[in-house]
Image (cartoon, rainbow, N blue to C red; front, side, top):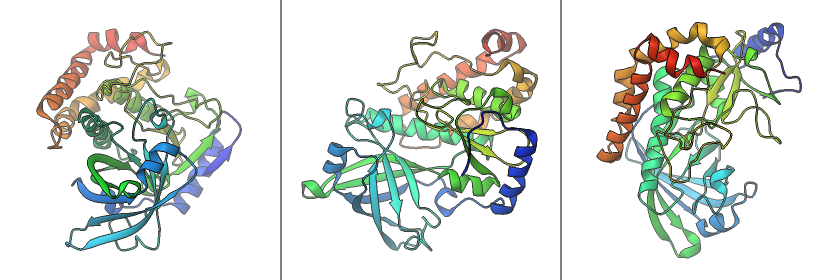
Length: 351
């Protein structure tokens, strides 16, 4: 990754980075893991009780990862795994933390996981079945953004049978999904991930930034920042920046469990915001990008049927949950139904 300390990239720097990115990365096809939407049945054997008790985000534990591939052959892979994340890694938030999977690159050659090394795994968090529904809805948020742009993180749904070697092989089967690594996304779109401490809104690609903010408004998410990260971290919050040689960074979002679409039991908005619940939408688009807003909204209108299809694409989503999600999307389309509605719901609330 490129690392810089200054806050505002200049046009010449972006152009230079773009030449390097295109030469080094070159657009690529999706990896086999993210090339299909079929749910992958996998089995993970590991000391899960140790994982849940220690919750170390630095110490890997040894395990195995197995699945049956498209040809019917069983693939058995060595695996190292550890806890990851911040909020969901806390014991008082999740009984089961999110996980980082670390594969042997040579061992996965020729398998569905070819080219994968470290992958984020979003897990079920709690025992209650409703938490599987949260996982499925967050996965669908990724798929909605995939339907709008290739400049988005791929996601693959898994049904994982967890085998706890600390407890004599006790088994539990739950839904989870893996997220495309930033380096693999960069290769796919012909760009380069960029690390900076902070940027200004003027440093963003305005059209893509509008796409992100309207998408976040659609799913009811305010838990992100395209210009600042945590006090002790690089930019940005639940956003990864990429440079593809054009002026302005591409801000690619991830982590949607605090969205109104997911409406997780533990989710609540930042108390500094003028909303009391995550299901209440709040537009966080930039006033300076409003000249691009109508074109962005036209893209969402054109993709309405596809977005609804995405929400109906996972059979494991319960009918009541699916209908609630579709009604939530209905609310978005009412908000952008005409010019007066856009003025009232978005433009007057821009930053």
